[in-house]
Length: 179
Image 1 (cartoon, rainbow, N blue to C red):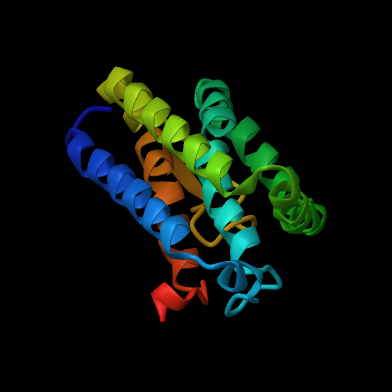
Image 2 (cartoon, rainbow, N blue to C red):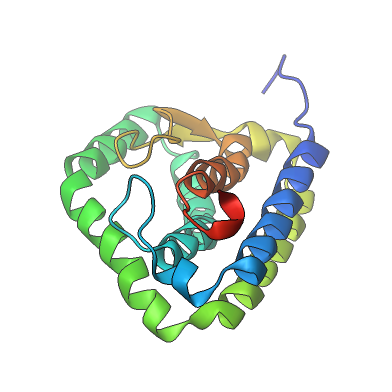
């Protein structure tokens, strides 16, 4: 878009790497008791919340696909889609809660760490391949689904979303190492 400054990709790369390092520290220092302990401000255990934090990054691939489709459509179509998703906030919240509850039963810490690394590496590659015009494109978003979703987001905003989400939830962990 004309008149917009280029996106500082290095800032996003640095945020992604910071989250990756932080995630590994959290996993490496958590005890079994830590992982079973309730978090501050959620109904999850620390282990479940750690998966939810990972899932914010896993969701980036489908979110970027949706962004590419809807950013090419008339804005009214994107607004209608965002309104539809906002109307489905309650069922989304149930699925959003239950996902981590079940996922930690199958995934385990080691696979969570490997998955985090793989997803972050993929996001680095994707970010480097984006054009400036793609990073500036955007669409209306369901701002009731997450406090870090704005009513309109660009692709660049979306790349920064999972780390904002991660940092917020990191403060809710009650691991011995975070006290």
